[in-house]
Image (tube, rainbow, N blue to C red; front, side, top):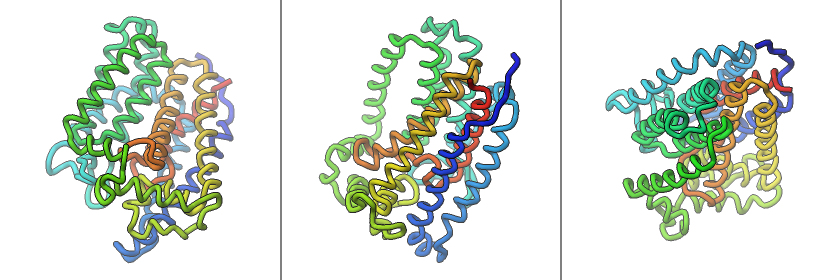
Length: 365
């Protein structure tokens, strides 16, 4: 197929760089106190974040400029490698435990999180698989069931870590790709009912998840335990008001809100920059999501369309869950805010994925 390539979507670049810049600033502001206390260097976290951001931007530049048909060829090998890494991380002595989950491979403080790689690998694979078998999707057994089995296997391995948040993002983005590819709503509705039943089963299998649900409904039942993070997050957001307390002036980062530079970084942003700062960040996310969905709708290649929808789905689902948790609308799940929260694997992989999306924007009408 002949493809006419133009310049990448400038608004998508503006949104990406804008969010990334806000993220670097907020990682420093949120982490300086803890970094000085733990490492004697208030720039400890932000220096590492800048390193990850530089690596991610370099990867974004590469994936933005290569022929995107190459991603089609790498889809299956990438998926198999990620399955291998997910199995490897579960081996005691090889996988590292952080935050109660065996989710990391690496040495010391440097490591990778295979589940982050799996999110992108699954989207790539589904985009290729569904492009080649799109006409079969009307059939549940021969069309929909095979990709669901592969998706369910990946989700199961992630849950063995356990990491419900990352698994939920992968699942949500993948189901968006399957829907865009033409799956029947009746089939997806039935799967949604099974998913609710499975979610109830996952909660019943792990008492701490049930505690998170009950605490989400009323965090003040256990203010010093399971409800602590939710309460401290609200204590950060509330005083921010319209314009905030000022950059660097957060009170909750002084060991009140745990790990303020990761999952709850939006709380610190709202405390320091107020409603205006929080709204600006959300508008940048909406701009990124809108331009990404525009690419998915206007590109003529089905593979590119499905791939664009999946990458946008990763961003949208992750933002929705993170903000929902921070403002108390959802239970605590351990999900970072894309491009903003501190983290190597999530930041570099997302910038790599956004490079692919920018690549696809070159071919949209």
